Image (cartoon, rainbow, N blue to C red; front, side, top):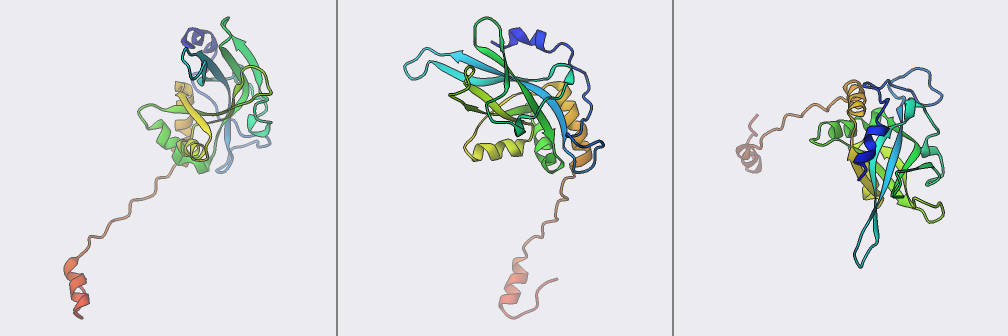
Length: 206
């Protein structure tokens, strides 16, 4: 349903995204998170059945217009984001003011995501009864597979949407710098003869 609107919202998206340091940091360093401003598209899907009249879901995550940085929703009251209706059917909304943050400590989670067959941007969202439409609103956006799993383990609603190629390239450059796989430890094979010798008081095989 949302695909009909994508050709408008993707205009002006850069092919490569620059790293932007978090507010208050002038230069990147090994522990400084990098940010990219994004909008979350929320969709309401009408249903015809006896149990539910509608279903809500994130439909897409897009780079914010002109790459402008807004106040991060990590620091705002959940649900109080800037909302723009899309289309004429009243079932799509653009929720503005979110950031994807890249933290060196989450590098493994980014690596697991971008090397999967279907890289995703994960949106943690909740229902709010006191904010008007849409009542389903994003709370946080992450590209870490591990962070998304922690949210789900904590009982949060998390859905993944397809990752834009520009976001993928931006993450991949970050991972190349910050992700250092742990070296594999050489497994020692059990020696049943050595164990038997020790039990019988004999020398262990070395």
